[in-house]
Image 1 (cartoon, helix red, strand yellow):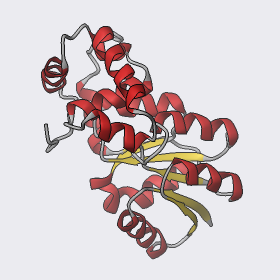
Image 2: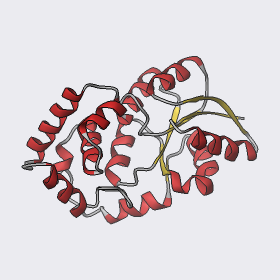
Image 3: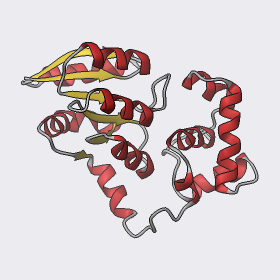
Image 4: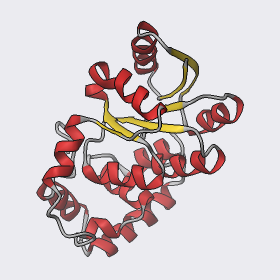
Length: 215
């Protein structure tokens, strides 16, 4: 029996994931969380084989959360399930300690296989993500300005170019507006951009905005 933890801030998403796993044989959903704080509490209190983790919950940056979870529970396998289909998010998640990465749109078809593979010690990348990796194989390593950003800065950058205000970002990440403003300043400096419009144009040019993003 594979024991699975679910961490996503949307109740309907967790309900859907639970239904998929419970409809298949060999899985037990041992607990659920809805933000970074409850996720940490859950992994500390509940023994499980796999954590299915959303990258964009309220609280800590998703990549930072992965690092903390792996520090506290090295044996717990992490399968990232997210709306972010960009290669950069996947690369950062794997470097932080994730064992799998898939988008929510592919969850209904791939979740059971992904959890099974990750639980057995394997690495899982959804077909859509594998295609994106292949498309960027010839891209020079660390050659682009957005590669200079820290994990938190990249998260803030993605939120800015997706149309979120500084106040909205601060609220979702549970930090002050001043903190996000400081991140924005550093992002502009590191990427050598004059303003937000420059960041948006850069993101569009390098396909760093999710399909359908409101910008």
